Length: 395
Image (cartoon, rainbow, N blue to C red; front, top):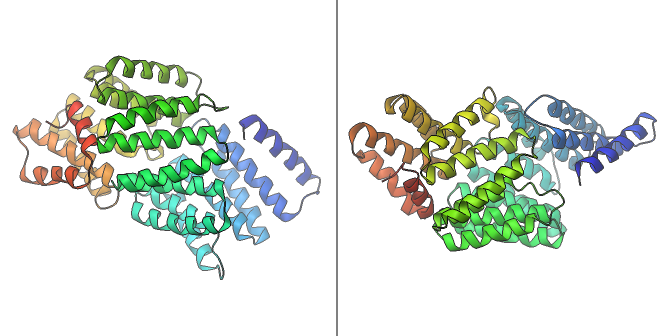
């Protein structure tokens, strides 16, 4: 649903509710729609969406309907992630767990999805994947293509973060099947781009490039393209395939697309994605400038940054280059501790950063770094390692 249409529908429902013409379930639906509109209109992390989500949850609880409560809890979780509030997401996770224990029959899949969403925020990817498997099981029995597209996309993201790339690709393939069936071009473009990234990190650059081109083509058919990240993902695939000119053209397309975006999240994604690309293409000065811009934009709301691992890597790189390797060491150790045994993909980036600091300080890798770098082969992340080599972080 487009933003203006959603806003119009919400306005009608709000008027009807004020006139006393809606039942409690309809009132709950109204409140949730208003929260969704607040999310769509939200320019940057703030309290407006959180307040709307809280009202939606209050209205849903009045009905006692666990499906409505689950949807409202999801809005609360997403608003917490959007605001970068760990406390809020922790609260929602606890409330969702409690709601799950209260169900004496089939647990609504939205509750499992919301719990997984909260766990994903805290980098507990294995738990999130297990919960999504439960949601998918129920959604399959309900034959719900919209829910299955969403759940399989989340499952693919979890598996990518766990460096289980084949499983991630299988999940994205299933998500794409359902998004295509319901005719959601934007969702299909995003899923195809995610597939491209998974292939890229495996080291299958030819498939990554082909999927990246397909994602851009699909996005061009969407009513609201939102193609900034899709173009940047294609640029990375092209760069690692050796087609630097085409890669630069893809970046130019991303720059054009971001000019029409006022969203804080989209602008963060652009700055981080472009900085990573600049580093891999050898433009260190530009990468440092973009990273500095991203840090300024994220100031005070760093936890709302979606690609936390990339943000951490770029911050480490900038500190090491501008202040010195020793000054970046504490940040690297903190990242390694945060992601170890939880988010393997981000952990590999943190391991690479630690090895890079060793090389800068000592002229060689330590035994611990050598051991950590062996994980790239173990996890089949050969493409990620190649990107880190191109960025000058690994030798």
